[in-house]
Image (cartoon, rainbow, N blue to C red):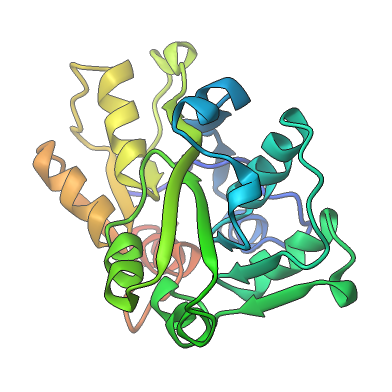
Amino acid sequence: MKVKTILVSQPEPKVENSPYFELQQKHKVKIDFRSFIHVEGVSAKDIRAQKIDLNNFTAIILNSRNSVDHFFRVAEEMRYKVPEDLKYFCQSEAIAFYLQKYVVYRKRKIYVGQKDFVDLSPLIKKYKDEKFLLPASDQLNFDVPQTLNALKVDWTQATFYKTVMSDLSDLADVYYDVLAFFSPTGIKSLFKNFPDFQQNNTRIAVFGSTTQKEALEHGLRIDILAPTPETPSMTMALEKYIADANKGK
């Protein structure tokens, strides 16, 4: 069956040269974007209820852009003046670069991992006497506490923001040839909004093993999977599938 319409369960890219737009033009398919989940900040009052005092920490571990945004939001709400000698351990270069939104980069102590959380291990181990705060989501990947506990450092996890399922009721009568998912929560959101969802001829695309597992547990047939050695990104996986499905279009 040919592919004419795709719904990507993420916000629309803000860059003009997004591979999704190239895919749309090259294969003459319609691609819509819609977040199936969104992030909501936890109030300073609720963070205090977690027995978190920002003055007690000498280093912050940042594993996403959301963790950056919500750490500085909470600091402002708590009227906490972020000290210049605070150390920042960023999971990736992209997160470290995003940190510049809030601090003057060259004046701060910023340590950057390669990509995965475990890549931060040598840097954290080097500063094992620091008191680390991890401002995180309520849905933290299991490898994060596992890595930090193995390092035997003094660290505290606090929920600064929550992942919430979005209201998708306006999509009730809308059909797409392909639905693309990037997280287990996205799959959960689909079934929370549409408990009687029937896949039928809808192709399901998933990114990552945890998303794949959630889809299978909900009885979905997975037609497009990324990353793979051949298709390391979702757009590459979609393009390969579309090229095969739309042959002779």
